[in-house]
Image (cartoon, rainbow, N blue to C red):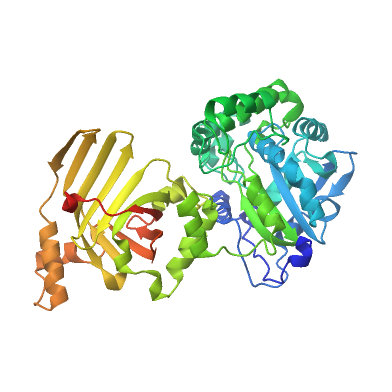
Length: 514
């Protein structure tokens, strides 16, 4: 059964304000684009919300296979059926190459299921043909947009130093697109880039291997060598970095043939939009270099009954806790949904007692606003473990890297009515294998007055002393406000505004157990 036959009638996906055409100035434009980049899939109740496709009404693109000039919002994408539309970056960009290479294996399957794949990249039609020949992406589904008119009309992130982007003032300096591109490659004005680069070297036991026999990106010699030395069945260290190195060599050797004439377009970002009868059902905006929508997610959404459907919150958190295979955007959406839920059964204080490994975090609101503009957060890369023991009222928070153990201990108060665990740390410790731990007290002496004030207030023993009012007020100290707890995972928002997810790994280990 095709995706079209399986699709349910659903509320149209809503549109975002387009500051690029509103004429409200660069600052408002940047804020609007940032807001658009925060969500991959949103819904809206407005009638006729076809905004994205209508925005492409005046855009013209050229088909790589025969040079035919078409309307992007008309003949190229189409207004009937399901269209999986990739708005690639320029044809000599890592993002375009990786996404196209990984999707090649699924293009025909998506077509058979009723989801037509269309790709629009930045550059000349000659560059598009070169790109198709080197990535094996079908030329009859690939279009060239030499001026990035589609990307501008849709409000995709313009990149560092361009109007509407980060460091917009650079547009008035002699710094050309090459200089801006180098800065973005270093992570400046390009959220998540460095994390994605390092991930290519470290690999992950939670992700699939890349070099698989018979796939579009397979390199038999490399595949066999990696299997002999590192095994198979997971994303091996240096595997993704090797693919990127191969791509870099081929791109640089054909740079003039692949890249646009306007060097400023080297930093323009893209995205993915899935249309259903002309209406947007799913949208992903690339925040920075290597921030493109994963190919597997594109396929999953393309073949789903309703690409705009929200994820099941509990199933998503369990999947993330057990295998780290849930998409970070879905984790963010799920925790946010549970936070808004009024179901009191979502949080049970007694479930907190245990040892929990940090799986996912968005960082603080300040970090999310200035660095990770997608709001989607990321899987936490190192072993960070927290223990809560409600029986003793003790917490331990530590980082564990091989033989190195660095952790903090302290007391906490569980404010049941607020689902808030408020804490402080009174001791810091360091251990190296069997040596240590070496500990140092860091108690500032205030916590006992906080605890006493809390006990007096909760037991009705009179007024709190004036000196204790500020420190005993809920939220005055570091805290986690929990939105979900069960025997597999817990989720909370911290005092800094960030969201976090932990997976249970055992019984609590605090100084109360020593």
